[in-house]
Every structure is written in structure tokens, then in C-alpha cells.
Length: 491
Ligand code: F3S
Image 1 (cartoon, rainbow, N blue to C red):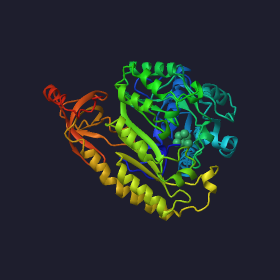
Image 2: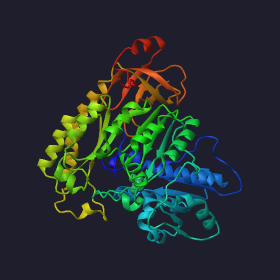
Image 3: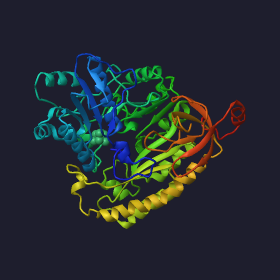
Image 4: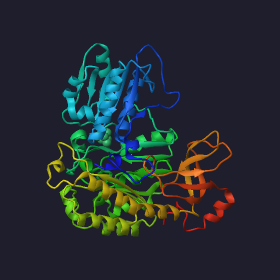
């Protein structure tokens, strides 16, 4: 599991909590329907994998003629798509359920908390009319019909085995220009701190043709940035084709008319030369590497049961930098893992100083019942774990600021996300920033500018998190094309 999607601390513009947090589901305008069927509202918690499942449930219900709405006040039934990654996330899910129950709502509990606690959860909350597991959300219409008929429904498979595809209806909840695409579900690794394989099952990849077909649909909907997600995206295809096939997938996606393809959760061992070549050679694949390294010291990595313990990451990092000189590097790290000594921590601190990542998420270890790590000896006291996290953040901050500053003077494409109608100020992102977890590009702009367009922007300023810039015209762009620093150049 990549704790960039959950955890207790992060050195990023937005906190993990925010990324994980409950979001109101707002289907795009014009997608709401109205007829005699009851209105169903959704509340979504957890990660982007959960978001995609929510979007499929919305699509299925809308196709079946239900009114789907972000407005819980009017809804007869609320579907809560829950998270169960760590105790904080479980508490947030339960708090949401109890609040809605107190408001008198009929509840359907979907997602990871439902998968985790199964029938016990249904029994403990009388207002819950149904629970739906992580491999069962495709049955949401049938579940709701049974609820309408007065049944209480337990639809949780013991082992989740489903993965959605391009034929499953989907109602997107992200802004129009950005879409997540799940290339595989589940995970075959057994990292000792992670409960996700228990909640999501073993890895099952979608065929390349299915992923490309969905990407083509999204391109037709005006998507400009496609974000590939799974548990370990570098393992994509292993279960289906007998070997990891991320390079082949990226080359196939190179044919899809979407200008940015971003890959999340690249496991270090999967970054072969072939994969890095695809990153470099496929024009719409961004050189953005999100590497959940977790630690640098081999003994800690061994205790974490990360399946690459021999060569310390420095080799990998040099290989990435050789093959992808423009790489934007993000990592996530856990401090205070059981048995982590001062010596191990110092190793990690030196590693961070040496490697100079663009973005780093730092988390304190959270002991989760049902994981191997919870029964390891020598747990680190929380105060020490917290102090280590603070120290690492203090080390990383000037590095992040310097990496941001190195972009001053570049002209880069910026995907416009929103404009303040009062001040005219525009927010967007360049390739350097992934949505939700990284920073933004601030632009002064007096003219109205449409969200979802891409504009050439000269970067004029930087701080720890964000960049500032100005939209430039044709003359500047012609001059700039001569510059070797141009972001999109691929050698
Ligand atoms: Fe995601 Fe939370 Fe489940 S992080 S996979 S929704 S446990």
C-alpha cells in the first residue's frame, strides 16, 4: 500500500487527511436525472481507487433511472463509500455513518470498511440497510432494489475478485479535464504494515485493450490529464500476461489523444530500463515518478517485507536520473516503524539529503490490527516517531523549495483548473504537480479563462509548495522553443 493515499503527515500542499477526506460527490452538470425513483446521495471517503468505485456506482444507478445527487438533505438513501486503511480513517468512516444515521437517513455502506467488518458492521448499525464489499459495487442497483423491497442486504464477497472495465457505466466526479483510470485492482505483496490486500484482494489487471478503450472514451469527454492508478502500477499485467507490462501499456496509451498521462505508485523494482524508456519515449507520458520507497535502510525495509532489500535506492535513483533527466520525483516514507533505531533514521535522513526529491510525503507508523507489523517487537514511542517526522520535514523543506525555484524561467504547459471571478486569479497545474497531493501554479489573469484549457506559462516565482507565472504569447514561445529547458522536450 502506498501511504501517499493515507497517513498522518505529509510534506505537500495538501494534507493526506485532505486527500483521504470525505468529499461531496458532485456529478458533472447535466448528469443528474429526475423521475419517480428515489434520490440517492453519495458520500465518498478514502483514496482514488474508492473514488472510481463511487463513480461506477453513480453511473450504474443513473443508468437504472435513479436520481443521484450530492445533496444528502433531499436523498432517501445515502451510500457511504468508506475507507479502512488506518484507525483514523476507520473512525472518520464510522463518524460519517453515525452522523447520517442520526439525521434519519437510510444507509448503504460500501467500500473498505464494509469489506473489513462485513456482517458485524451491518449488525451494529440498524440504520444500515445494506453493506457492499469492494468487489461487489457492480451490484449496487440490485442491492438498492432489495432495500426498497424492505430487505437488509449483505453483499460482501469473502474474496474480492471483480475489476470494473470500460463497459461499466461511470459518472465522473473530478473536474472535466482530469480522470483517474484503474489499470488493476488488488495487490499480491505482503508489506507488513499494510492491510489493503485483505481489503482489495489479489492483483487482477485489466487487458491493455480495455484500458485503451476507456482512455479513448475519456479523451472524447475532453480529459486532458489521465492518471493511472492501481496498488502497484509497475506490476501491471503480471497476473494477466505472466510478466509486468507497464511499458507495453504506456506505448499503447501513447496513441490516445490525451496530452498528459501520469502514473501513480511506481514500485522501485518495476522501474526497468524498458519502463523508463517508455516514460521517456511516449510523448504524452509525463516524467513524473511517484515512488513509495517507505525507507532507505535495508533492515527496516526487510522488516517491512518490501520485496527489494539488497540494493539501496541510490542505484535506482541514478538509473532514473540517467534515463530520465527531466524526472520529477515524489516519494513517501514511514518513520517510527517497529525496530527503527537512530542509526536507521540517520540513514534515511542522509538519503533524503542526497537524493533531493521534488516532493516527499512523511508518515508516522500506524500499528494496524491484522497486519504483521503490529506484532513486531520494539515499537517506537509516538513522541519519538513524531520528532523524527518533524526532523525529516525540516530537512526536506529547503530541498522542495530549491527544486521549485529551479523552474523559474521555464515555459511550461499549465492545465487551468479554476479562476476566481472576483480577482481574476487563476489556479492550474504543470507536469510537476499531481492533483491533490502537490502544489499549484498561480497566475494573474484579467481576462476570463476556461477551466480545462492548457496554456503556455512562463514561471516567474516559486515558494515551498507552489509556483507563480504568467501566460505567454506566440513570440515568447518561439524564442523559448530554442531553449533546452523546455519542459516537454523528450530526447
Ligand atoms: Fe483506499 Fe482506504 Fe480502501 S486508502 S483502498 S479506501 S482502505
